Image 1 (tube, rainbow, N blue to C red):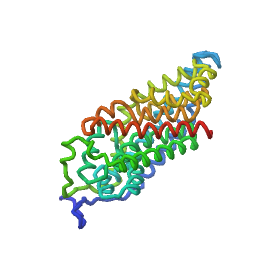
Image 2 (tube, rainbow, N blue to C red):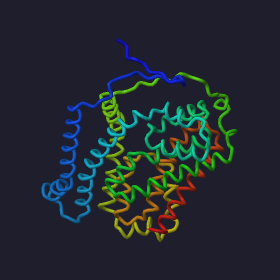
Image 3 (tube, one colour):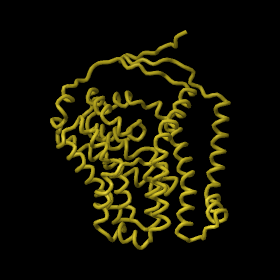
Image 4 (tube, helix red, strand yellow):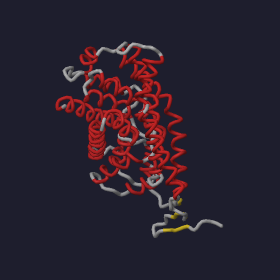
Length: 358
C-alpha cells in the first residue's frame, strides 16, 4: 500500500509516516550516550598512562608532550565529531536544501541576510555543493546578497566547528566564533547586496528564471531520521577523518616542539602584522573545521593571540582556494574579488578587534 500524501495549497507534498519514537529507541539512545560519556571521560588519564607509563616517555619532554597530545586529541575529536554529525544529521532532516531555498525566496535584504546566515549553520554544505546551491538560489529568486550570506555562513559557522571549539576550548571561544562568524556573513552579504553586482554573475546563470514547481518532500519518521544520522556519520566522518588525524598531528608537533616564546612573538597580539599574515597564509590552504580546530587548540596553548588564530581559522574555512575555483563557474572574477575583499576585510576586523579587547 502506498503512503498517504498530504499536499498544501502551494503544491508541496509530503508522505505520511509514524513520527513517534519508541521506548526501545529512547532506551538505546540513552544507553549509547552513557557509554559515550564514560569512554570520553577516560581519554585523558589513558593518554597519560599510554605516553608516560606504557611508553616510558619523560613528562615535559618534547616527544612525550607531542605523543600525549596526539593520543588524547585523536579519539576525543573523533568521538565529538561522530556524536555531533549524528545528531545534526537528524536535525538536518528537517532542513533540506529545497526547504532552505523556499524559506529564503522573496525575502528582503537585511532580514534575509540574517535568516540566511542562521540557516547556513544547519543546512548541509560543502565546497562541491556551492555551485548547485547558488544555481538553486538564483532559480528561486533569492537576492544575491542573501545568497552570499548563506554561502559565507554555511562553511564557516557550521555545527562541527562550534561543538569542537566548545569541547576543546570552552564555551567562550565557541560563542566568540559564532557571533563573529555570523556577523561577517550578515554584513558581508548585505554589502554585496547593496553594491548591486548581479551583472557580474556569469551570463548563462542570469538567463535562469525562477519557475513554479511542485516540491515533493517525504515526511520522515524517527527511524528514518536516525538512519539519516547514521548516513551522515558514514558520509562525513568517512571523508574528513584523514584531515582530522593530519590536523591533530600538526597540533601535536606544535604542542610538543614549538616554544611558547616563539609562537607569542610570531602570532601574539603584540605582532600587529600577524592578523593579515594569518589571513594570507590561510586562504590558499584547504581544510575543514574538524581538521583545523586541533591546530587552533595547539596554537592557543602555545601563546598565539585569539584574534590572530580566529582570523586564520576563518580564512582557511570561508575563503579556501578550492571554493573560489568552484565558484568561478558561476561568478565573474570581479565578483569573486569583491567577495574575497569584503569577507577578508571582515575577518581582518574580527582578528584585530579581538586581539585588542582580549
